[in-house]
Length: 223
Image (tube, rainbow, N blue to C red; front, top):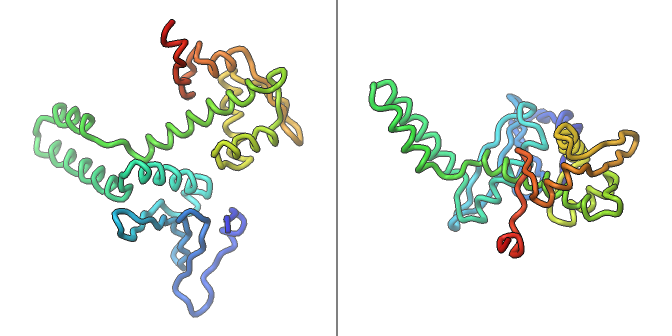
């Protein structure tokens, strides 16, 4: 069953127990100890059961933990072990520090590290964020008069596989508004209006940094 921030804040270790864990679904769970609450992801890779740590609550909130889960699942879909990837990144960082301390060629080492470094989880999360922003604009662009509300928009996003909360959607919309891609009419239910820059970004005729570029259609490629 999906967790909520209120439920998490109320969790305490019962008397006589050292710890317990509660699931949020998709392998993500919260390990509750007297010393704190720890986000973990249980997953299988190459036939082995593994665990990946996502940080301590509340420094890592519920929404952020869920985003990390989705990023890890994206890596698994590409046959990449997120735990091994993190270990490799830490080894590279440690090696870079040792090289710097020993006065070796830092510049060459950094260039080699950048070229060889696999896609990091944070980079996957950024790609997912940019793709979601593009999808928001594209959904509004399909509506009548380029206008919708947050409830209808959230339902469309969920139907297309973007499982986000109202709070996360409003964060995305506020950012898009700052980029002048949408206009918001804020009330009990937000109204959303697609601007010309937002329409252009959804069609790929302009690029707004932070929003994924649409893939070129065959007709566009021929042009």
